[in-house]
Length: 320
Image (tube, rainbow, N blue to C red):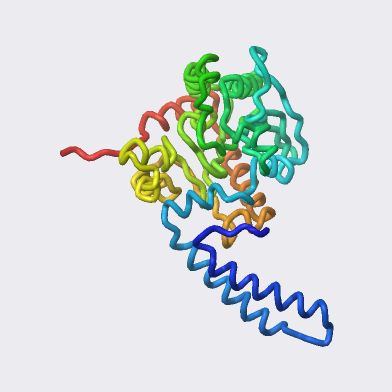
């Protein structure tokens, strides 16, 4: 992990500072040995970290999902795929940099890959439009998915967006229509579709690439119709009530799997995905390949029918 700590991680930050201080003293003077002290501090840190992350509130999970050092889609491309060739453009307007599409290979298994990229630093965030796709991004994604259908390749999507771009330009170019068309086309796409929520799954911006046979989520990711801040502004006219909104939205993995909105929670390393990229990638890769193996046994007709049934039965209610 780098230098960034979330507010609730202050106890971890203090212990890790002490560990680093002792290590620095050892490096300066080889005659000094703080191994036992460092070991005890590391045990204490691990215990606090495990306790904190087992008891995160919904708002704290939102913060982890947005962590500046959390793996982004480009990290997954680099670390999961043995080979990747990017597609550009929607053949209508331009190339939306917030959505990346292409051909990916994991071992012998080939995929058409679609994912949302937020960018790491300020320059990248501006270049990627903060991971908020415009209509041409969704049209580029659909172009790639239709190609997957044509050539019999499964589709693998990675969701990480606060939502679709809300600006006037997007509306002028048909934002709503682009999202709606993706929902319509994906619902009947004749090839397996697996979606992985790796950070934020926000509103139609996420759903436009997540009408899938299997929706998987990293443990500390979120998936909701709206962000907590926007929800608080609408319901209570006060964005400061985002913690209350996060709880009410039921946007965490534990809530969503209980309602059968997702198929599986992918466990994260101790302290979150940002603390161990390698372990995170290995778990995502294993889970995706396992689900694809199950889907590959279905006929095309059965696959599409089960996808239809999956979305028809979403949601639970009580009769009064």
